[in-house]
Length: 60
Image (cartoon, rainbow, N blue to C red; front, side, top):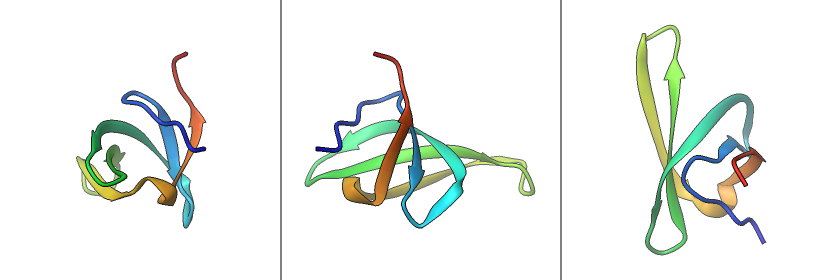
């Protein structure tokens, strides 16, 4: 299973070039992840189903 926790580094299954940090585990199998958007100069947040994300690394 895709065991994710806050602080893990993930990628979207559909977009492998952007690494995001899990910032919250939400109800109903959803999570919130954030990344730095260089062109906009701001943090962007993505919320989606946990199966839309793939773990790259994280603290044990």
